Image 1: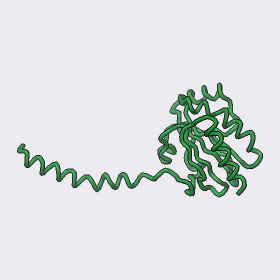
Image 2: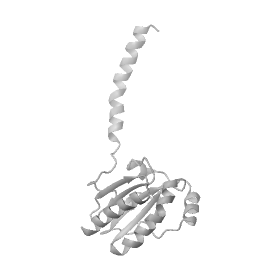
Image 3: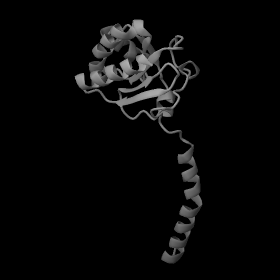
Image 4: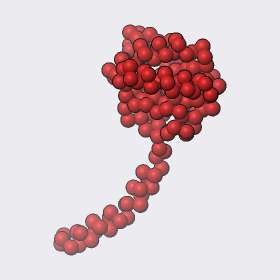
Amino acid sequence: MRPLKFLALSVLAVALTAPVMRAAKAEKPAAPKVGDTFPNLAKERLEGTVPDLKDKVVLVDFWASWCGPCKASFPALKEIHAKYAAQGFAIVAVSIDESKDDMNGFLKKNSVPFIILRDAKGTLAEKLDIQTVPSSFLIDRSGKVTMVHSGYSGDETKKEYIAAIEAALKK
């Protein structure tokens, strides 16, 4: 094929596919930001029982059994749960483990008093554009996101959680 003809066909192919690629990118919902309404967990086809979270401040934490920072965060989450559960606070920890056995093995070694759900197919994690585990969203009593946090940095993260939870509980 002649270089000029090849170049013309290449330009035409890019011109024809660019709008389709932009449309596909535009269809993917953006990750929730502070002030956005968080998806209703009961409608997300997660494994496990989603309790009634109405009128509660909820920390939704995405984690995985293979994630070291997730394992490090669980003792802090247990402490936070114990301190604020009686005040209308709940933690929903959503495992993104594909294997239920992996999740259960982790939970056997790290028992928790809060709600555990599993997003085995990753549909909710994809919808929320989860890029890092752990990733957390604090949801106020009206269902709005008040904090978005990625990763876990020990006491620094724990302090951030506590400040955000206390502020949300006061509203």
